[in-house]
Length: 110
Length: 121
Image (cartoon, rainbow over all chains, first blue to last red; front, side, top):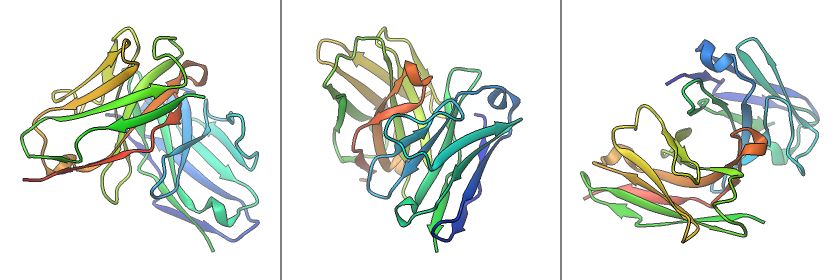
């Protein structure tokens, strides 16, 4: 299975911007634009916040944005708020029609 | 609005088969607008993609689980199911069913609340 690598943790102060990278270790994953991002608060179901690299579903704050360069996709959270403290996961479609998640990044609001 | 709800035993014995069902409400499982998926999270760990099925029955699985897992769909009951054979303690996890909208290109936009399954004798 292809692997997506994320940092274990990222922190920032309220109002700041943070960026979470998601690096594909397999070109078959990096070659696709089907990258999505999920916010996961403990005890709740994950929530889709970005799809197709840089698109937000209806209702998701525009403080969340996505981008991709080569084999690395990134999630940026602008204007960090206390409610943004959660785990964040990237996910990609693969060349064998499967999905794969990154290891997850814990975001801490200082 | 589409809603999903997992159900099944919370405790499964080692070497037995884990079986979970996801009931879909607020829409038909047969519209063809979604891939129906299962995701799990081991205690203190990250999310793991298990597999998905289309309403036609076409399914794809995580290669690491492929020998033990199957996902089926029951259009008459508007639900889909997960079966994981020969379970061990390593299969103890929170299990989520979700829908990956074709519009969102496989991104999972509808989730059930999740159910905890413990593998223990």
